[in-house]
Length: 195
Image (cartoon, rainbow, N blue to C red; front, top):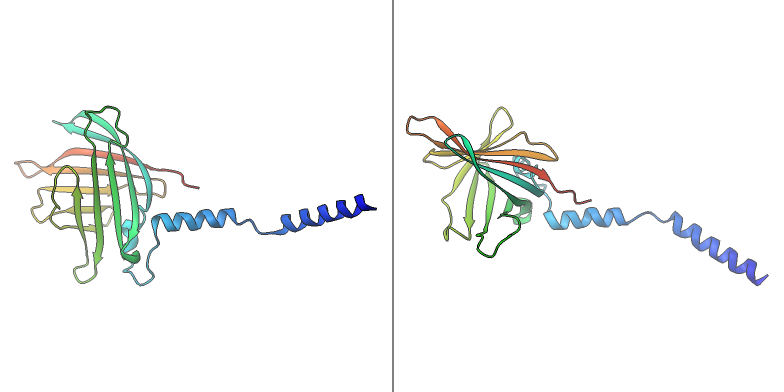
């Protein structure tokens, strides 16, 4: 009789445990929200333009000289909601891992916030190598759903394009003396799986 009671107690504990909702997935999603922040419901809708990039990205960078590949390296790029969900902040690390003591690593961050009065993004970049904050850059989304970024000199332009949930491309072009644009750097970014 004692064995039957013990067995029934074990079965009832097992049934109760199996009927409990699985919370590990919710905790994981909550941790992801905590890690990357969330869009503030009162933020301008345009905040979602850069918000699409929120997450961790593994990047392949290709630098060009005279329209030919000069070098390639890897970087990590993390985008998060900032300022209580009103802005996007990203963290850049290139190369993503140092493989020699003499190698220099560029570590930088952008703050990007949409200004509804100007109908433009305003962005500021700073990095460990420059020792200063870059002037305010502006950004907008064009008719191709590409994000364009530039300063008032218009001597360069950055474009985020082919943006999907799992990947995006990026290019930096500089103005040639003849007025045309020359490709300087490209990045292929693939989202790191977090769940």
